[in-house]
Image (cartoon, rainbow, N blue to C red):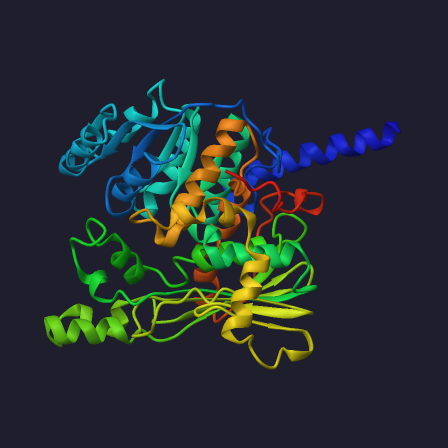
Amino acid sequence: MSSRREFLKNAALMGAGAVAMSRLAGCKSACPVVGMGTRADMEMKHAPIPHVRVGLLGIGNRGKLAVRRLTQVPGVEIVAMCDSIPERVEAQLPFFKEQGLKTPKVFSGTTQIWRKMCELPEVDIVYICTPWLDHTPMSVHAMRCGKHVGVEVPAAMTVDECWELVEISEKTRRHCMMLENCCYGRNELLALNLCRTGVLGELVHGEAAYIHEMCAGLFNQKYSGGNWRGIYGIKNAGNSYPTHGLGPVSWYMSLNRGDKMDYLVSVESAAISRPAYAAEHFGAGDPRANPAHYKNGNMNVSLVKTQRGRTIVIQHDIVSPRPYTRLNVISGSKGILSDFPLRVAMGADAHDWLKPDELEAFRVKHEHPLWKQGGDKAMTLDGAHGGMDYIMDCRLFHCLQKGLPLDMDVYDAALWSCLVDLTKKSCTRRAASVDVPDFTRGAWKTAKPLSVESMVI
């Protein structure tokens, strides 16, 4: 027994030393949390907060819609709002007066004023709707200030940032939930229910995507407040927005809770649409008309292999003239669900999709209980993406109010977001295989899958 203790003691010392050396070498992403006093907690709980006070950070495209939604969630109050552009915050103030609500405190005018809002004692959760590159710094500061965090997608842009979110959440014992609304879409919840109840059998393969033509917007300085999204695609290859399709498929496969991503490969097409658009609108001599100006091509395709042998295809294309789709495919040994439009095929008859009347009966039979409970109201709200945003908000705040673990935790935020960095590394190295970090440090082996029965509002 004593020799075992000595072995564990020496191993711990060696691990801490290895982390220190890796940091000196500038290689933090090896696993910066090891040896730093944190540990995975897949069921992290916090004291119940019956009346949740929100500090809303970023009042742009997503933030102004969040104002409307959050004021509809029972037991939730927006007590502070922040944006570096004063006009954005001021434009929302009449809404509170019209609704008979208390006017929130306002923070605006500088690029660092958000820090002051995070430090407010009366804020319980900071709800972040800002550009991508700000997500991790803001989330980390908020957690260090003792606040829970809800952050728009992706939560981080590098593997190092993903580890930082995990480490700070564990150290502060504060929740960090990435606001992946698509997990709460009606068809996504239907698919989750099929997977949990075994209707599709043993899961084999999933497909996820974000295909959404917005080429003109990527050149518009007013779109998303300064064209940061377009600029990112100029400078970076890879899938910069993987989580809308990947989040639901990760839920179906219980990634981080019974399975884990093992490795991935990623390839990218040439940049065609953006230089063509620039040539047409700005002239062939404009630098933006040169395909070499763009690191990001039209289509990025990545393939993930999981520890249990499942495969996931992930696509990203925001410039080709194609109808919107997230694919949302989950295939098992007994059947398949494929979305956009919704189709289901089962068993011996799987060579044909269910007919419309059969599909509707199937949906009614297998509707997720969470959608049955809140779907009707959710679909009546403006800016809720067919109801999914409101259902997501209700679940987040229900868990905070009851002191329950979140549906999507910091490990999900890290795993789904890390593909931004990993796909870039793979496709810039001729589709080299890249290992996916285990942000749970082995806890995925015993963590319980997300329970359908527990998802209520």
